[in-house]
Image (cartoon, rainbow, N blue to C red):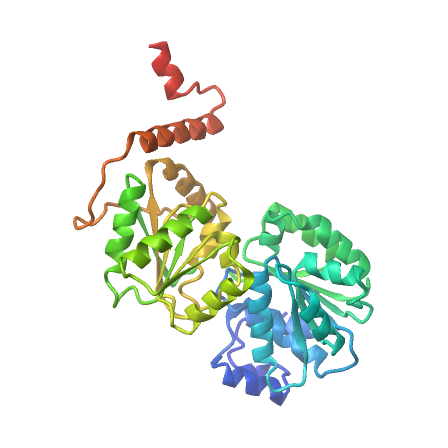
Length: 419
């Protein structure tokens, strides 16, 4: 197996077109996941790559994929990359095109949320590498617009998210319609039980490459956690943070719900703390892609997002990730904070925690095997009084959490009645 001492792109058997693209993309040296995976994939080995977001795992499979497919040929795809969301599909296709820019390869993304007409017209011109969401791929296959018999390589990217989103039945159908003789690659930020079962189902004698333990947060990201008593104080704290324009230059704010994302965006617009845009599943496909492009190009200062919509955002020099809400899908914490500290840069992740969210924070600490000390709010932040309705809802939520851990626990409301 390849040792981790590979420090130069020249150590790989890449052709001059790939080396030229690597240089043009500004990649100075291979990352750890690239050092370990590229020789195996080039050698035809099936690979499970477990690497947190921001470690260069897309290039770890895309470079050898381009090397294998090499040049445009025929009309049917020879490689298939499956991704869970439209945003990630668009992102991956752009990334692979950048690495294939000095070749004549045709890279085509397929995703739902838009009419299929343009995608069908593009397919008819010929495709070498297909990047697709499972649903749209099956839709166009059944309509006879996608021919799979030439496929030699299958890549599953963000496999953990695919499992979280319930894609297993669709993936099984896809495995049935593509040639059994192929090279399979699976990439994921975490290696949950579901991902392990998936890998056992479709990989044969894979080599598992883990560049960090599962669900480890990036070392270059400073993680700060603040105790915040209620929603209104969260808003005040966010305003306080973003008032420092020099330090908070390019910021992602994560919320748990679409409603909260919209409310936060409107507040920041009203306070003149943008430019700011929001992305979530209620926003149209073009709106989301435009917002991501504006953020990538530096036209936006703040991008507000829910978790699913944020997959596939690969932007360097994100100064801060702010968790306005603590995620209740605990893997999402790793993905969220991985949006900063990318490509050898440093970054800061700030998480706001109400009393009802401390339970979820502890679960995240168990997952990442790391204690995150709670800090007090800066004195300059206006602490609002917790409204009675919010206080009661938080008390109920804490009750539910305690009952989840201890089925015999009767609840504070129950005890109060008994007294």
